[in-house]
Length: 189
Ligand code: GAR
Image 1 (tube, protein in one colour):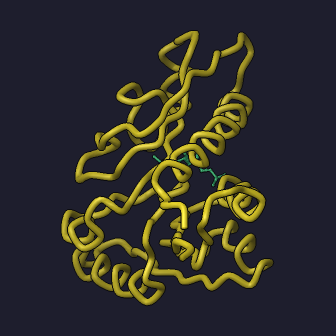
Image 2 (cartoon, rainbow, N blue to C red):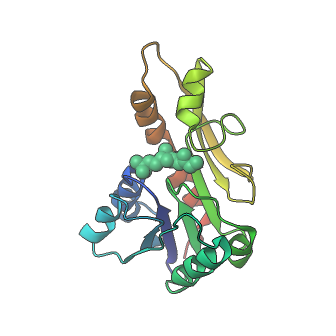
């Protein structure tokens, strides 16, 4: 039986697009069955183009986080996912939601964790003037990028790198790492 992957995004979804392209050409017995977001993210178009269902659970200032997470969990459950991939999903998930999906939520992150956790990992690496940063795939826990590291790899920072040029190189690694992790996590039928 093929595994059901649900992806959550917040932004442009270039990693999602790469996954949607490479998964059907891989030996990984899984399909992306739905894509969710916390806002009307541009990246949802990659799902629309392939006829993959999408949903948006917007989080507005002053909203009750637990109620939002419950609604998000309900929307996710509709698709009975075996695995949830946070791919540029920029919102912390409360413990109640993590408990609901146990250890089935993984996250890609643009740094060599535990270096540079948080929402500005690439900018933080440039500001710190490191010569190397990296990419990681982790299990999501209640902390900020503190979960178990499933795979990670290094990338050099070049003189003259901008946040965009460095991030683009890191994303190439993230995409490879995610496929490696999916290969190990998804059972072969
Ligand atoms: C990716 O680099 C992802 O790792 C990062 O957002 C980017 C999304 O790019 N996520 C985080 O920083 C989470 N802390 P994309 O929208 O082009 O796929």
